[in-house]
Image (tube, rainbow, N blue to C red):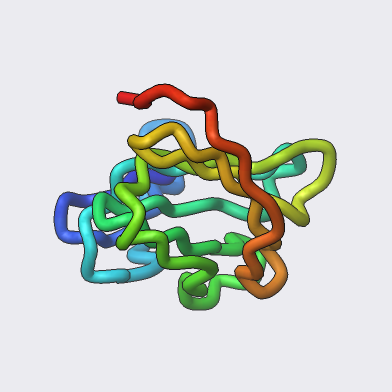
Length: 118
């Protein structure tokens, strides 16, 4: 079970029978608004309230890697673009949908929906 604390800490609960173990996986020092696993469960996207997206790979037990910072565009949400784990899609409150490379955070494409998103 993965969850985030208000302070921007990604925590893993390993639960087996009636026992559990807690592990702090990453501390990104920004409140995390959502967590999404990739379709094959190898990567976890951490989306912050400020519009920054991080990637965390549970099998590698490393730090969360900053993929993109959309803080200047009223960032609302992000998720994996399937099939595969190579791209993510984000949306801003102004209705702009953006596609990003998860490999290096490169901006690839955008389309404006012409309506505000909440």
